Structure formats: structure tokens, C-alpha cells
Length: 361
Ligand code: GYE
Image 1: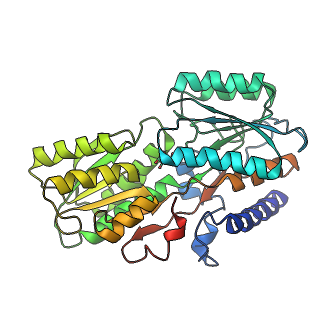
Image 2: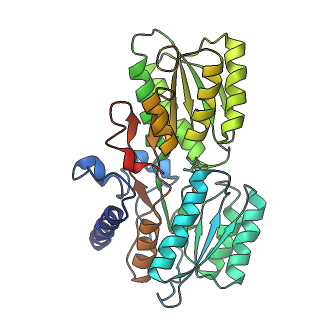
Image 3: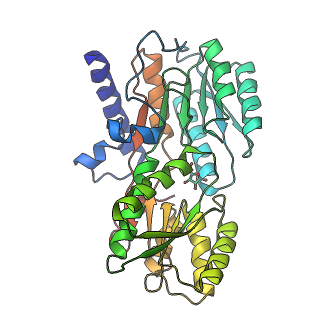
């Protein structure tokens, strides 16, 4: 057990180093928050990773993963969709790191279809992929694909949209931002900005339902709302991570409420940008009449924060393939992996957008 922890720390440090090298995230962190970037989260937010514990289960329950050698490694990456900039950057980053390290990779795109993703994984296995990385369309529906991998002992690494299965049993580990923390940051930002209001009228515009990102971004936000006690949810509705859908949803909300909304919390920046257009068309001034908070940290959002058309965002980098490949290499070397590796996020608003600009994509 102690050995496991030591190995995990070494792995974490390796990841921090390579993160620094690829410049994929903030480097101001010789400080404590920086460490959260790659360490397994404490037990209280392990739930956010969809995991019951931060270490692999006892040997009786654990799946015996069969790791290939580095020479034989053929990664199969099952991407959920390529409908946003975030996802295309994510897939490109996986390809880039595989190429740089000389590993074979096959990438498939499920186009947002949970059933198709199961056959995608089957086809990756049939093509001889011996480590599978999955960004799940749906955290539950992915289970049959995980079972197929498990039958063969093929190690599965979840990435960015997790599984509701058991880490160490249904998959090896999960690399992702801590979505619960992102939701909390957004809630805290809004609570602070609206501190003078008795009741805060909030519209929550959600991403594609079924993903652990959406579940946890909502969960973290509602945690803060419950604690504050004065958030009044005027609407909680999906706009499928889409800018145009979010613009429409926001236009309807503004119409039905007569513009009486204090803050929009959007599960991604694309939607925040759409909401901003709707608010501007309705004659509302962002940061005066209404606050708009997104998640992701697109350069476009950073520019909008500077222009005053978006209030804030929480970074969520799509560029962490380096860490995923470090994890695969650690597995190949026989090291014990934690069940969750968190990529650190930073809340960004007008006060710190310049210093965090490089976190964008
Ligand atoms: O925030 C969003 C994307 O799963 C973390 O999916 C990801 C989210 C990201 O389409 O923009």
C-alpha cells in the first residue's frame, strides 16, 4: 500500500513535469493548488470522478489488466464526438503525443451516439488495440464496451467524460478536470458577484446530458447554491454544449422572465458565448444587468471577458494527452495507478485574464 502511494506520487510528479513541458496548464503552482492538478482528489471529491475510492480496489475484485510492451503498444481512442472545438483539440492532442512518442494510435469518433460508441470500441479491439482510451458519450451506456475490454484484460483509461462503473474493475483510471470543483468555482463566483442581492435568479444552461461532466458541473454548482440558500433556479435546461442552441434557450428565458435574470451559468464557453449574444440582443449589459459564467477557457472567451461580454469562465483544458500517455507508460512499467488524476482548473475573470491567457485553446 505504501509502495503504491510512493509510485503514485512519482507518477504525479512525472505528470507535473510533462505538463510544464507541454504548457498545457498554469505554471504558477509551486503552491498547493497546483498539486491538485495531478494528484488523486481527496475522498470528499472522489465522487466527482465517479469513483468510490482513490486507490485501486483490493486484489479480489480488481481486474487483471494485461499491459502490452511499449513496442507493441497500439492505443485505440474512442472519442465521444467532434462537435466542439474542445473535442477536436482533444483528439488532435492525443494524435500529436502518440506521434511524438512513436506509438501507434487509432482514433474513432462516435458522433455523440452512445450505441455507436460500443461498436467503435469493439472495432478497436478487433483491430488489435491493446490499450483503450475512452471519452464516454454516456457514463452508464458505455458499460458493455468496458465489459468487452475487461473480458480480454485490455486496460481502459477514461478521459474527460467518465464512466459510472468502478475504477480498477471496469476501467483502470480516469484523467479529467474535476468537474465538481468547476461547478463549485462557478457557483462561488456568482455568489460573490451577487453578494448584494437577497435572491439570485439563476439560469443553468447544461451540456449534453448523460456525461459525467454535466452531472458533476451541475452537482458542484448546486452544492454551493444549497449552501448559499438564496439561488433561485429560474431554468435548468440543456443546450447540448452548442452556441446556437444556447442562444435560443437564453432568448426564450429572457423573454419569459422579462429579462429578470441575475446570472447565467453555462456548462461550457460555447454556450456562454451564445447566451451573451442573446443578452446583448435583449439590450442587457453584461456585468451590469446580468452575469455570464462559462467553463473551458477558450481564447474567444478570454477576449470576451476583456470586452466585457462574458463575466468569467473556469478553465478546463482539452490538452492533457501528455498525462494520459504518462499514465499508460506507468501501467506498462507495472506501476500502480490511482483511480483518478485531476487536471487543475482556474477561475478566470477580468482581474486575472491576462496572466492566465496561456491556459486557453
Ligand atoms: O467542456 C465541452 C465539450 O467533456 C470536458 O465537452 C468536456 C466538455 C467541454 O464539448 O466544451
